Length: 214
Image (cartoon, rainbow, N blue to C red; front, side):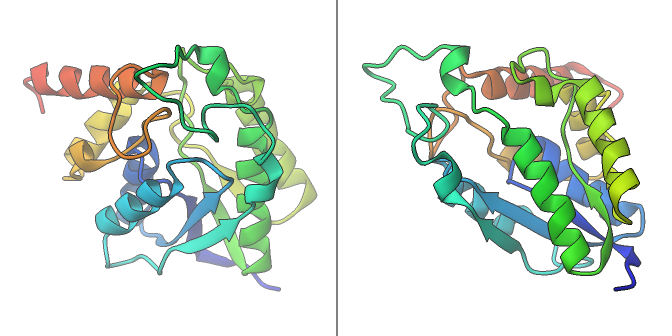
């Protein structure tokens, strides 16, 4: 199957990074296919609703949804089983989900190849809070190279050297309502303000507010 170079699959979850990435890809001339992967995360419904609400209608196909909830149904991670914020003490280790990013990236590349799309964009960033080895810059770069070696789909990770503040700046420049994104790891309906994702997001939004150049 000939791959279409003008289309790109974009892994999107309604979070700040992936939302900015989707708009960024459109601004760079791609017609995007948003891909939402439901791996059993407790906030999947809210993530998907946020994604659909923020997605620009122009230059974007309807959201494609891949469901693989069975992969992690027995995992003990609080990403899968929502914690009770009134009674549970949650640590970063409780949010660990093994091979999650590897699963997302390989699914995105396979989906693109099966649908004749030549490029996959993923919005992984350089986060100091990431515990997973498959969230490091080195791993992401090796994965990108591996995808190019075993098939025709190009895996692109344009934000992998950025922190969330830089991504927020890009989103602001593109006129994206980044404050409406959702990326909490603990609460399925509202930002808890304390999990690693929330801390990074709040730090980025505060930095943006205080930066007079934006």
